[in-house]
View 1 (cartoon, rainbow, N blue to C red):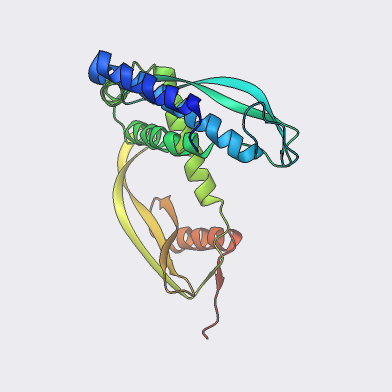
View 2: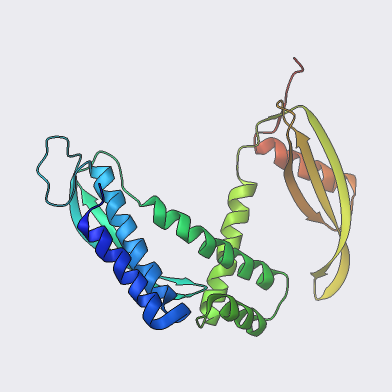
Length: 229
């Protein structure tokens, strides 16, 4: 059964679109996201607001403000909080909505890492987001990419059935000059037949010492041989 507050939220969102057209999209999304998160909290607690029930699994504990920059403008959100619950609560509707923001930040970081000027990155990001982005935010986006890459490099690789090694050469700035460097690549075939990139390493050449160090790093990450069934 739909709660009266849900009707009010939907009506308010529609009114924003009617009055402001696409300029009201951010307001409409703000209303709908906030309402969706409140519904999720009620479902998580197994109790509607102010409902007295023995099935309750915790209590509402206000809201935490959060501003999200999106391609339709800034969205002011109110993240529902809970207390005395057995498990932590985080609204999945917000998580899904933030994925696009996170993907955008990673794209910005990738441009930055590839050598696109900060000024150019800012201009592109502002066109995508519809809001101004500072140089500090560009740097934070680059840091986010570093964290993603570090997490990928440090993950547990596990067993593989086949190991495939290859290398390609790319121009890299090194010691003040641009030189050709070898990008060592390891690909594996897992026991289920799926292929995956195990790791990469940038070296000055394909000398045996560089390959050995690269393979040792894969072993340190838990890469092991899988016996054939």
